[in-house]
Image 1: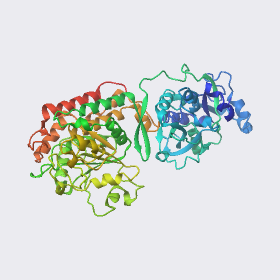
Image 2 (image 1 turned 90 degrees about the vertical axis):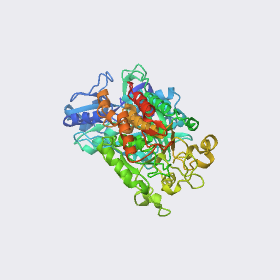
Image 3 (image 1 turned 120 degrees about the vertical axis):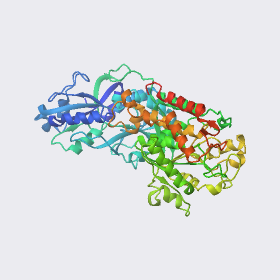
Image 4 (image 1 turned 45 degrees about the horizontal axis):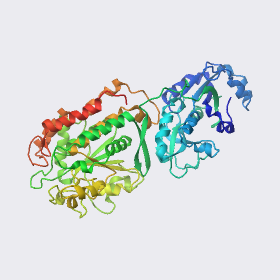
Length: 594
């Protein structure tokens, strides 16, 4: 039967429920293809034969035509039924009982309301005559219970599976939660986070877009009740998966959480451990903050346009004054980001434009970079210069970049100067790129990452107190400008390599990719897919050695010793840096299902 709202709220959680779509036979293949292309909103439980009114796998004695003929559509249904095909689609009401058993409050049930459903600005993958926006349900979930809600629903892929978005509804194009397109408003309680699942009402939008001469669907919130118990032994419920996704908060303003599998998260944490080694004995472990690498990688994975800056002119007595730490890590990140389809821009000092352009061109010729990267500068020409640089026409609602990354970039101290680790002021060699990171704090939608190995780098203001108290000359050299994420490493380049590896792990993580794509247009990630060209985008010993030799060729010196040699921060490329790169790759490519 098609359950009425009141009965659903008070007892039907014991059985699997389904959305219903009935279409003319000539549209059936297109609609099935549409379901297969958009499995999160349209998990197909059963497709009938033309004219078939029963659905034996779901309900032995059901006759959908009797249900329809009880409605006002009876006259239309009785004639052409032999030409109609029924589709039964999984429904998120099927996991609400499991949420309650896991201790997760179901606010719509508590409030005696139908679930809130919203039409989004996210387009489904079209198939044949069918195309439409994704429709989602929203359930308020206490922040402390997000992982429980994710785990329960992940194990029910035929009831829409894990959430497709957690956080600010504006990411989905939803402007006002108090005005659902279907259902009723469900109110958030203090401490709740809006969590969105793909919704089978997407099928109604698809029907409306295709304009068939005749079609039927369930009324939103009134579901087809199957004979299948809503229990872990249900044939519609897959076996328990130990690699379920877990949530991580990526941004506070706007609020955004992301999902990745426990296996992918564990590997990224291993990368963080590797880069935290300190063979130069600089005391960098004292600045370590857990999971900054993970959060930065997730934010970058969600980004579309990234600006990367580097350059630390520590050798003020030499020309050029720059060091070999920074550019290799920047190029490694840029390579992976470009391969993921992100727009990447390099940001440098005006004094170094010609040299850095030549270095980028050389990297392209040597195969370290697949294509040239735009190179830009920033000049502080007035109070709104940073805003106009970061946003189109200076409009904070239209950011040009959604992530800024600084790696081994001179950071401004509290007195307005820039210091190397010896406490020498090098301000005359540094453009005020810090202003962009400061301005970004007040622009919703732009996140920032700083990568450093001493505490005087741009972005390390996030750990300023630790730098002041624990690093040599910390009270003088500490960067005063924070980033959202502060990645610390024994050598900053290693942090860039780890970001590239972390992005690779997220790209090959089905749980994360499903979340990024909102469960639309998915194809399973296979080992062959993972290997196809993607390992070539990772840093490698050969590529990094080649790029370091290019830097030396341009007269760029080791940071600690000023040697014009194959070393970074006084550590020779072989064996120190080559070993770290090899270990990062070993963690990244170790065979594990993500």
